[in-house]
Image (cartoon, rainbow, N blue to C red; front, side, top):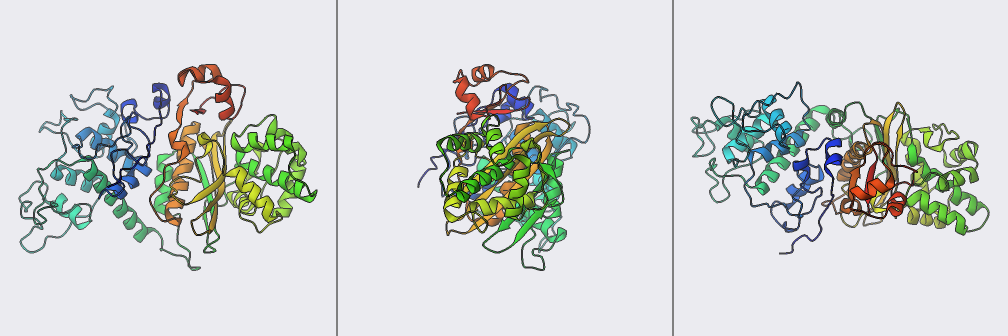
Length: 526
């Protein structure tokens, strides 16, 4: 049996964790999909990968998941809140005497109590017993209530399981989770439910993964048909959009996907125009390559240096500003629009303020990275090389949830805008193991900080990739970096100290190269 060797280590200082809205103790579990104590072929591995890729569980600081340990009531509350992306419908009052207000899990416990998922562990409802293990019967009650599983009809003698008859306090919940396929009888005794047995962390991962897939299946059956009249699936159904909006209140988001393998195109809020931030740099690169191609030459050494800073590290001034002037500024970009067949973009002297649609950005990037436009095959290959080598900290977005064997090239955008919050976006293409391609763009704004914007972008990109690829997600370079959110107005030296006295000059280079750390910026090392 081979053990997964990859581990995801994202170290967050307490200030960064709190500003991202994640309780520090809970966030001390490490973000990622694979864990050092989880075998690749473990029976629960696909389910654990599913919920980990959604951020429901994140493991422990040493890179383990501890699958055989009983799951506690507190961690179950955390998992359920994350799985359903619950938000408080009123004030969190602190109703349990044994849940300290400072406890990282306290808001999660309050939310599950507020939603009626649990009433506590004693008859008066004053105690929660956060460290007590969860039994299979309790798990059935939690999951049936949390996921709104329908009541199941009784068969034969009134009960599916010999030890969970109609007089069992969790009888209806047990029948419901069994009917929904969330959990069935005991592994060794399928005729019994074994309600008093503790649930392991691995078992809870399986239960949650199955419950989520049941929920998605129910939503898909009532929301929209599986395919449109042109034979393409409904990639962005109503239920998905509502869940994303609920998890990111106030944020605006839009996406476009062109699948060159099937000819299908998918659109999420296609009429929404947003400012691009650094997503527009993909078109600047296209302009530089096209200019050199028209002149019958390669990029000069100085151009190559500027392109590297623009594409690998997303520096603005001077490299991108210099290249933007070289391609003709706003007027030159409009000329490029005509050559690439783009019609809905408004360019300005400030390239990051370009107003565009995801359809235009996807149309540009597919010609840049896949072909079919004015660039030669040689220029397309060069573009892929530049855009497939973003720095580790900036390799999020298009890569979210991609399985091993899939390759991606991308350019991300991230920058605050007065009155528009943080903008975050990603544009690029994916090449599958058989050489097929699809291109995508996701753009968002009105995010409270960069980390929140990235989370929103990745949620959408991960959904796209899960639908268009086959296999479990692979570990990414971005999952191995250490990130913080520095206080507003921080210097790079101060950020470097927070990250363990790393090199401040290199830190600035890796994180966009601005003179000072931007308010709400996610700063990563290395």
